[in-house]
Length: 179
Image (cartoon, rainbow, N blue to C red; front, side):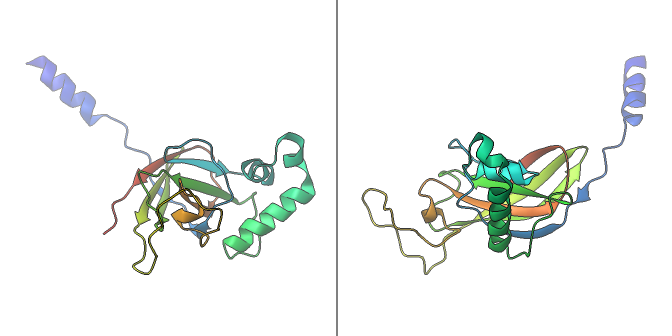
């Protein structure tokens, strides 16, 4: 009879869960030119212009070139409809959905980002293709560019970039079903 009493005492003394803090989403938009290797749904956090250059396909020393970094920051800022990106105050989370999560013409949308105990929880969903999106013709992939931000822009994946308040720590993705 003593064991259940001790168990109840320990359960009652458990530390409360860390408070969740919503990170402000300053902007979000498609990120077809930011490449994340692999085929599964995944993410990458960009906390500096050098990390942005590396994810954009500039290897080694070229990623450290200030002129390349400046051009890439301007490019993604324009893509996100911002004047600039201040990596001392902001981070970019890039999420790429796999083929099984997103079909051609669909879009990826981040609903919220919350930081709790050193981890940012990103809730995201895939919006189905708009009714006006023409079906993709059968046959081999084409080299023609589809509208930016659609899965057809990259036959295997659809991605989005989200500009949020700066944070350090890991990211956990949570897929939300569309309503």
